Image 1 (cartoon, rainbow, N blue to C red):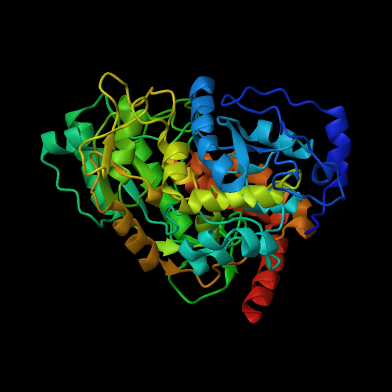
Image 2: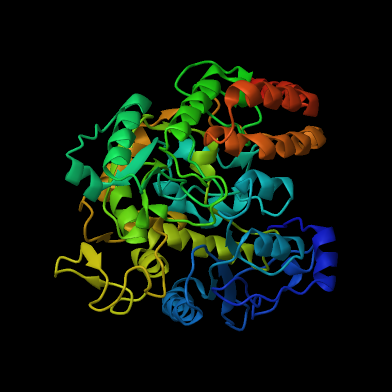
Length: 508
C-alpha cells in the first residue's frame, strides 16, 4: 500500500470553506464514494473498489466550456466502460477558471484528476503550492500503458526536484510561432504568404491590407487584454524573469528578457507599426477574444499541424499561417496544459488507472474529447477515420467543445473533416523534430526570491503589454522599465535562476 503526504493546512481549510460550483460550469460536488483515509490527511489511500465490490467514483476536472447535461451524458458513457475495466465511474466537470481551481485546491476538495491549464504559472505553481501528488510509484504500477506512448524527453519536463508530478499530453510538445491571417483577405488581395517568413514580410502584408481595408484592424491581439503569443525563440525558464535568449543555441547563460536587444528591436518595430495604423488601437485593453472572427486580419499565434482547421472551428474563418520561428522544445511547452492527481484525491491509484486509460483506450479518449456520437459528432463515411458535426448542429455551439489538446491523448481519436487524415503522424513528426533547449527539463524554484518576483511582476504589468503592442515609445520608456526591474531585484532573480540551472545541468 502506498502512502501519500497530504497537505494539512488545506485539510483544515476544507473544514472552513465550501466550494459551490456547478458541474461543467465550474466545479464539483466531490467523490460520492466517500473520502476514505486518503482524503482526510496523513493516512493511506486504498483506491480501487472495496472488498464488497463497491464502484469508486472519481471526479475529473477538465477545461473548456460545456453544458452540464452534455458533461453528464459523456461521463455516463465513459463510466459504462470504466466500471468494467477498472472499477470506477466518473463525474466530469469543465469550465472552471483559475480562481475556482485555486479555491478548490487550497480547500482540499476531493478531486481525482485536474487539468491545470487555467492556473497562472501552470505546473510550477501547482508544485510550489504542494497541490500535486508525486507520480513515480503510481505510474510505474498503474500507468505502464501511458509510459509506452509518452516521449521520455517530454516526460522529464514534468519533474520538479527529480519528482514526477504530471504526464505530458500527446499534443504539440514543440513550439513554433508566427502569424495567422484571414485567407479570404489574402486571396482577394493576391498576397503570397511564405510558409517561413520574417517580420519584414509581415510588415509588407499588413500595409497592403491597411491600404485596401482602412477600416479593418490589420493586427489584433491573440486574446483579450493585449494577449500575444511569444515572439522570440527563448526558453522562458518558468516565468520569463531570466531566460535563455536563443533556445537553438548551446548557451545556458540566463539573461534579462526585457533588456535583450531583440526585445528592444521588437518594441521599436511594434511602435512603428502602431504609428502607421497597422495595430488595433485598443489592443492592450480590449475585452474581446477571437478578433479574427470580427474586424481583425492577423494575429500572433503558435503553429502546429492542424492549427488552421482548429482556428476555423473557433472563429469560422479560414486562415493562412506564416511561421517566424522553427519548432523547438522548452520545459513549459512539454508540461503545459496537462493533468495532475491533486494531493486531496481520495483515490490516487484509481485516478492513475483512469489516466492510463485516457492514454490507451480509444473509446474513452474519443468520448472525453469529442463527446457523444450522433449528438456531438458523426463519422463522415464507413472508414470511420474522419468525423464532422451532425447535420443542423453548430460546431461552435454543440454543447460539448472538443479542446482536444487539453486531454491526454487526442491521437487516439478520428480527425475532423477538413484536416489531413495523417494529422497525427504530422504532429508526431513536428514534435520529434523540435530542437530541445539546453535547459529542457529544468524546473525553477522561485521560493527564495518571491519578494523580488512579486516586485518585478508589478513593474512588468506597468510596461510590458504596452511596449510590445507599440502603445509606448520604447526610446523613452524601455530604459525606465529596465531600471525599475533592476531596482525591484531582477538581477537577484537571474543570479538564483542561473545557480539552479547550473546545478541542474551538472546533474544531468
